Length: 109
Picture 1: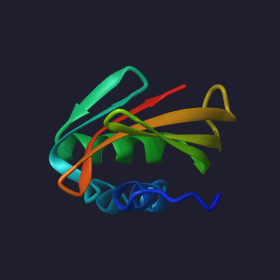
Picture 2: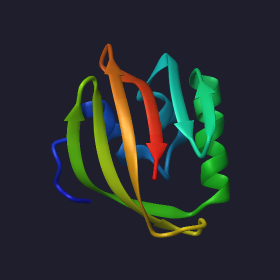
Picture 3: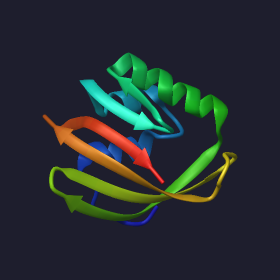
């Protein structure tokens, strides 16, 4: 992984992704919202299910390439390679943080 200075909750998210659904969920606030592939997941139970479904459906790896701050969001561009349509893809992860955890995440192409 590229040596980027990611805020702790975001670094923890990327460290756990692909490996540990519970560790990913622990990065989010209880009322967090995640948006991916046109779907919205609200709350920890929905986020756990989303990440579990993604892990069952796809094998992938990623490399965060860049980070930028925009207003109240931290945008991380990451190259994702796996068995999904359009691979490889450079995805933009838009994180909003609150109380030391992820309050929202939106993943877009």
